[in-house]
Amino acid sequence: MMKRKNNKGFTMIELLMVIMLVAILGAVALPQFLDFRTEGKIAATQSLVSSIRSGIKLQYSQQILRCGGSNGAWPTLAAVSGNDILLGASCDSSEVTNSAEARFIDQASIPTNPMTTSGTVTACTASTTPAEQCTNVSGSGWCYDAASGNFWAASNVKSECAF
Image (cartoon, rainbow, N blue to C red; front, side, top):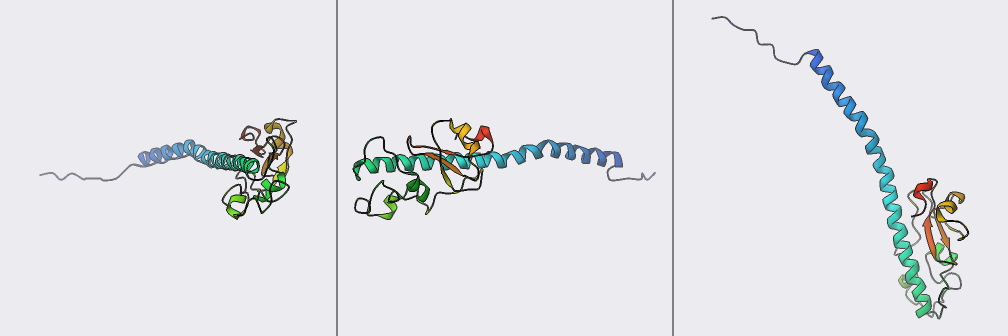
């Protein structure tokens, strides 16, 4: 009976092919994975903008119903920036007694914009579109137009601007 020599394992060519295949797949997948970070920031910014806009609309209604405000008079920049309707000339403490009711959002202050890492609210006018306006606001996280109640995110990326 003849004994066969049984060589187990992979050849060098097979190993190199597998390593090359993994490298190619990694090179294709890595840019896609890195893009998820930007998409996550955009989604977080859109969510925050939506929440703050809802809060501004709620406080606009509060001003009319509780504070005797006139229709079309949106909360002031100071009120939105400080997350407190009692700041500025919007309402006074006799009309809004609960501090939770005075806030636009539940947090103590307006959150930072994930795109710019700034929580500063800057006065912006309706003279330009939000997409044009937010690239002109340096160091700002948010733009607010007290005349129209418009609120949007500032960003250096023009396509991400008008959330």
